[in-house]
Structure formats: structure tokens, C-alpha cells
Image 1 (cartoon, rainbow, N blue to C red):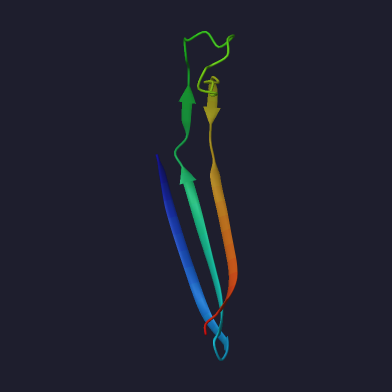
Image 2 (cartoon, helix red, strand yellow):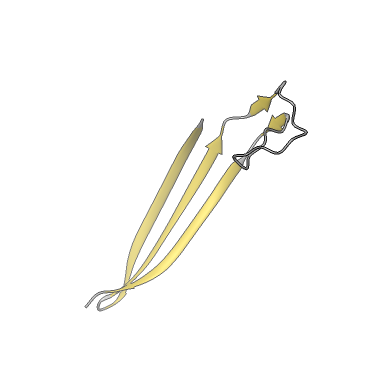
Length: 69
């Protein structure tokens, strides 16, 4: 599970030009993986479960310039 929070802006620079930006923060719930499946072989799907405690947070930034005609 995760929660996403975001904000953005647009600022007119000159006629037909706009500066746009955005920010998103993603907060992931902590999780613990304790698999009893043998992990010594290759998974045909290209994924493997690795036992451990996982915690993650992400900061995403975006910036762009828009020209209208």
C-alpha cells in the first residue's frame, strides 16, 4: 500500500509561454517478507522474493516549458 501527495503550478512567462512544475511524494507502507519458498532457482517470470524488511519513500519533481500557438 502507498499514499501519494502532489502539487503543481503554472506561471506565465511571456505571451504564449508558460513555466510548469510539479512535485509528488510517495509514502510506501513498511513491509516484512518472510517467504518459505526455495529461492535458489530462477523464477520464470523474472522476479524473486527476497526476505527482509522493506521501507521506501519517493520524491518526484517535474519542470517544463509550454509554448502555445
